[in-house]
Length: 227
Image (cartoon, rainbow, N blue to C red; front, side, top):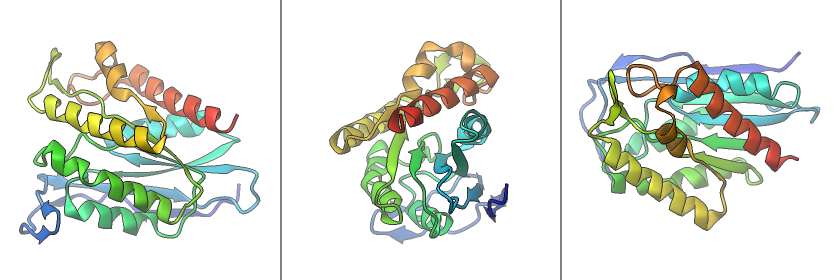
């Protein structure tokens, strides 16, 4: 269809052997494997289609293609997925590099399952920074924020893992910030609580039914914004 595709980075997997570093907000706490994947479709010059960017983790890897299919003919759908977490001083720099100078009409942001070494307070301190970054190159962009799904124990899906309480507090900070800024919140956490049947055996990822449900929530909200 003539759209210029920009593959900013393929799946970059590397062992986290970097020494800890300091900045004004804290210490870098790398995971055993850090990864990122960006697929950015430049906003069409004709204006015939709108541009949606979804930022998140491996959940986004699964539901972004479904969203793109559901919005085909209306939106081009890009993604930035990474193991990076708010709380990590390098996360903002990572987003800056990936966002570049691209323009988007809607950005859906979903971050929270990674970075278990950061407290809920460290995570929350980065929410305003991320918001300002998303708006910097896109002053008129419509932003949606998604809460993180619950974390369950692998092969014991009826139980939550030890990190889930911190995740709840992260979500509370997201909801409080979005309420002040009048940002729509997609409550993936509430969905995950009600639907244990959406989970794969690992207790983190969703199966095909759950992925479709996440995608539909995004599509419904985007449609509402542009109805």
